[in-house]
Length: 417
Ligand code: UD1
Image 1 (cartoon, rainbow, N blue to C red):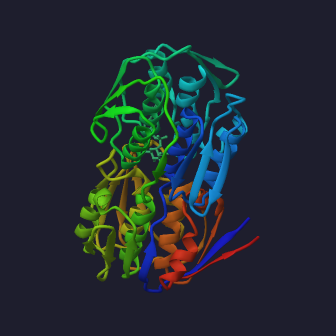
Image 2 (image 1 turned 120 degrees about the vertical axis):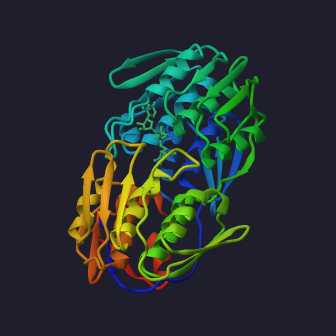
């Protein structure tokens, strides 16, 4: 298995190009199941998770053509509605095929994703919403089996804000009979991106970006040409990197308006942040200040940047309380950061981080995607060499992260096993 080796302590300076968002690309690719004919999506990142969803849709009979970062998808002939355990267990977001398959084909058999490193993460809200829309749903041998001749519009209240739940049911509702109202819907930019692309396919959706979304069902949708938004988690990771090593990093091709929560916290931590129409420049100025952070649904502070922000706080000049409210078990990076000299105590859903002047490089192991990124950041700041193993987590969601950091001046390389 590949490893990433980092010699810490180098200042980062320069510009990187923000890649397309994994969490926008996945639902958008799933949405092509709602149409017959060639869809075309620009700005698709080259990631393991994207290959996984292509393999999954390929198993239904969907065909693809890749032209650079543009992916063309044709779901004209669907020959199977079975999302097998082997694929779903490697990527929870596979559940995004459930809504579109039931809406288009009248049935779907999708494996339950099972356990996941960052918590139980059930899909009960997805299932409940489909039942509210008239689907018959059963659990059989670890699979969700959903059937509906035609889904019916319904008023759906989400008990918790769920991103893929909102996306799944929004897709299902586009082809339902009548009007669906989603209450307490997710407002993430990736949900808005999906809705814009569905509207391009002929869907009738209003209220996107608010917590009440109205979908008026139509009999059919047509293929579309769409563009995937920039990855705000990748951009945020590089902004935080500028703070942890005292660098000057410009991220091109991003949407500064998606970063309000992070930018506010980075400014509180002492970074200078400059924004333009499509760029953010982050400048670290000496040792960061400690600030408290609580993860929340968008537009709150993203849980997918919690681990990276914690790395920043490990070298800050004071005490920081980082509270995770979205997932119950998302502090697995803590023990690895402590192996690098970080001073962290976890109490319930909060981590109390006492900044130390310097971290030390160490062999560390990634436990999930964002935890891996936090260990890279720590390694960039640490004295000595950090060796990160289980790099496959990183490859699920960051496009050539080591090349991007190397371009900024980091001493970082991937060692092939
Ligand atoms: C998405 C993102 C992920 C991000 C997360 C929160 C994608 C592909 N993934 O994941 O990167 O960390 O949003 O911003 O977009 N829940 C239930 N029942 C359900 C659904 C969710 O209890 O049926 C709970 C979850 O366990 C969790 C919370 O709701 O505690 C939020 O989860 P959700 O927004 O659904 O996360 P994902 O959509 O899986």
